[in-house]
Length: 62
Image (cartoon, rainbow, N blue to C red; front, side, top):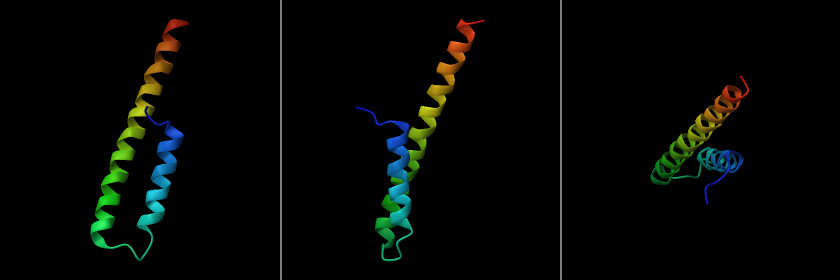
């Protein structure tokens, strides 16, 4: 089951908080950074799908 945009955003917020922790080591930070970029891509995909859906709805009422 895919996550909602809000869930992805919350996951990203959590990762960002972890990255700001000064106790993180570099290897852990790199892993978290990669996870963050993957979440951002998924969020962009959600937004693009939403935009497409809105366009379809608008086109259907014209």
